[in-house]
Image (cartoon, rainbow, N blue to C red; front, side, top):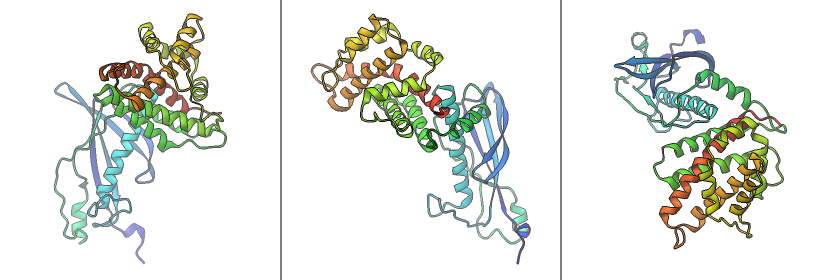
Amino acid sequence: MENDSDIVQYHWQVSFHFTPSLRESEIINIYDPIECENRAIEFKVIDEENEKRTQVTVDYKTNKIDEVLPDSKAKYEYAEETKARKYALFFQNLILERMIYQRAFKPVEIIRVSKPILLNEKELEDAGLMGKRRFGMSVLTAKYNILTVGDSIGESHNFWKQGISKEINGKAKDESMIYAIGELLHLAKIEAGEMATFILTWNAFNWMYAHFGTITNSKNRNDQAKMFKNIIRKLMTQNDVNYIKQHMSSDLLNSLISYNIILKGGTNVSQILKSKMERSSSDIEVIISVLECIYGVRNQIFHEGPSQEITSEELALRAKICNSMLAPIVTTCLKNFINYKS
């Protein structure tokens, strides 16, 4: 029987470019889920003609020339292409982690600059293992709009690993759900329309507080106001509150009051916000009232739409104002949720 050491494998290499660039090159030691091994991966900053980009190159192996993996996306997507696609997603998630860690979202491209390159083609030819396939160079682009600025990828990934492993009430956090929420937030950042941007940000918030309520066994999952109080009180420190306050000018708060938002059941949340501000209520209580007002605007956009009282232009303006306050709340809660332990 042939020993594993005697098997000639197919060695591949694929490269990606990140723009805008990282500030500094870094090498991180990380578990590679595609090759199922710990390895060092270099994120190298390249400066050409005063324009920086970051390059990452990975090597990997396949077993057969015509190997097709179970999770291929097309009939003729061979293993080397499937693994290259997985690496694109792997790097996308690394940068999503970093984006969440920084609480900042900005469009960025991850570009795969070539098809997988076969590194040991001569060895395979000499062994008669090349078959009829040949591999030419071509440029292939896959774009992901994700943030890559601030602290290192290694730092944010360590934060992610340590936080995601912390259980809540004996329950594991849904890692794929958190990635999906991050993806909604970055899509909101690149969306041109004010209402579409707000809807994406709201959906991210909705997914997050619903998942938080489920995993913390909240008894108030059908009560919107109590859900807001639950997530804000549990996931915000005083430093976080100070950060959120920077995004809530008196003009923005007065706009929410002027909308005179009345929720189903007759509660005038605009007046409640006004009352809290006049009484100098705690910042946490003001933030909760702001969320209730934003929820009212959400209802106007989702269920009512433009009318004689509220034009499409006015709705777009309300969406813009609400999103400017909602986005920092969502990103703060999401980052703290990763590290939350009951």
